[in-house]
Image (tube, rainbow, N blue to C red; front, side, top):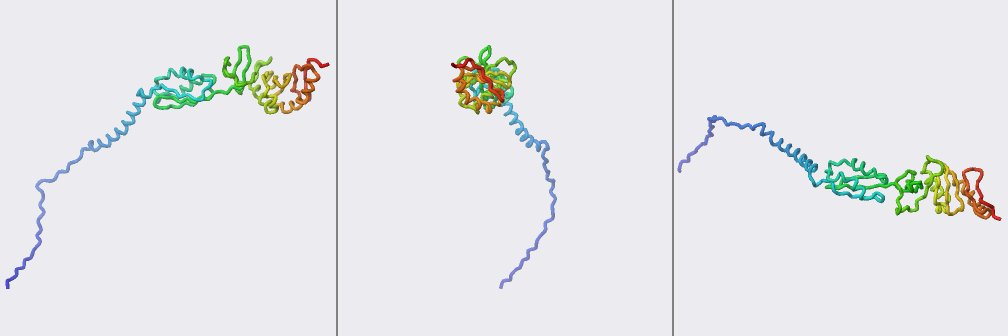
Length: 267
């Protein structure tokens, strides 16, 4: 039998050998390490700055267009003429206060809303004063608002929409708004008579002379007393018409009496 040979493998430990030359570690330049974030930050800052500069300088945003609504007495031509010096201004640089200041000079404008409409427009919403009466004076007719404040001269050809005619008696400094108030009071107390009211003459801040088509004579009244005084007069109107040729006026200002001036008695 052939002899078997046994071999034993013994582990060998290799001795540590130091490299002949040490490996060099390359260190990054600290300035290069800061370059990337600095570049990103620069881009983040420069982009909006450049965009803002473009917005403030580009002719794309030069003001040239106006959208106007809510105007009736305020003519579009007047608005465009008043804003003509602002044409060509950069829309983003334009202060809206300057626009409002130029337009509020119009006597009919009570309120104004201004909005920027990119790229080159303004949107104007006009709120106009509401006419309530026409004041008769030596210079013609003046349109009044509900407070009795003058708005503008009434021009021939303009629609008056049945505006109340107001005149002033001997008194000089009076509250013209009281004429509108007493007309509304008459409308609440006697709507049938109020429908024929043609003129209110202001005698003082509280006293008025009313001219009505429903009556053959004017009424002198005091504001705030019509609800108590008119029911007393109404049943007497037929008797006055049958007894007298005419009556110059009826004074209702006194609580316990009714004063009238007959022109002549009928036979």
